[in-house]
Amino acid sequence: MPTAPLADRLRPKSWEKFSGQEHIIGEGLPLRELLDSGSKLSFIFWGPPGTGKTTLARIAALLTESEFYEISAVNSGVADIRKVIESARQAWKTCQRGTILFIDEIHRFNKAQQDAVLPYIENGTVRLIGSTTENPSFEVIPALLSRCQTFRLEPLGLGQIRDILERALLDKENGLGVAELEVSPEALDMIISHANGDARRALNVLEAAHNVVTQQDTRQVGLKTVEGVMQQAAILYDKKGTEHYDHASAFQKSLRGSDADAAIYWLAKMIAGGENPRFIVRRLLVTAAEDVGNADPQAFILVQAVANAVENIGFPEARIPLAQAVIYVAQAPKENTAIEAIDQALDDIQNKGFSYPVPEHLKDTHYKDAKTKYGFGVNYKYPHSFPNSAVKQDYLPKALKNRKYIPGFVKK
Figure (cartoon, rainbow, N blue to C red):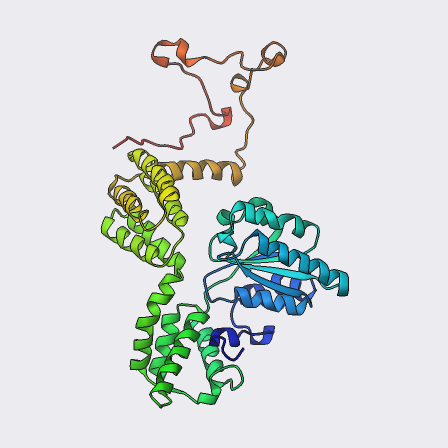
């Protein structure tokens, strides 16, 4: 519609006008092949905001000549899914057209809501395309994830953002071409840099700058105009949780580096940006186990208690226990024995072929014939039967005798 935001009006409707994601939509590559061949598979698009997730879903509908229904997990529920299912049945009954159900921000659906979609994917009533800025391995239920192909989208490059902006400035039908704006090179460079790989962000800033200069009865968009627009836009984008991965990375690295002040700052940025508190708690739990570990086991217990508190009280009060946990984890002594040990053991098993059966004396003996018929557990020495539980016996497979995964850790 003419009143729609510039970013929505300029959505490409074909591969030729789509910018970025060449690693999945280039000629002969997986997603391009699946859609060009009319595949009926379901997809999940995972990536930062403004990288083309919704646009790809709409192109998929066009290429497969499907009915397209778009719902947002933020304000939709099971009732909305049922309405789409009924419409999909009617579309197939009357004109044999398939239906794509696009769920934006699918990570915001709870387990019950995600379960509600499953039967209709399985019986072919709808194809699901979900978009998420969160890792679907954590946010999408396994049953649903196993029925979808997952494609990860990357932030757009500087050149790709520039192409999109230049197209917007020239397009007289859907863009700003009629306005004949004159954007200075410095102003255009600033918009591109500020976008940080997000086409929607870039187009929103350009549109806002257009509105400003139109009110001033000029066509000149200079550096000062763009700077003013971006100062206002920053709050809007933070509320939408942009730069999700960069902020999460800075947060966890500050915790690991024992900089409590920096960790609190990044926590505040994520809260102000509308970040899901469960995601913040997960980062805290991982850090408490990976970077604090047994140097202070209380850290993990505290974060788990805070996780329960956050679920029960919600924002804004949840900011207080979150801050408490962040300060504790940041200031706690650090050691990474747990991750080093488990990763070394996994490497032995998965990459080096050190996968051996359980030694006979350690095998299960709870059933009738275990000891008498098979000899399992016969030579097992029960540690509590020895003074101070001091008993020498091997617990690793013979081929790994004396293998050390936790060398010399002493609790601080």
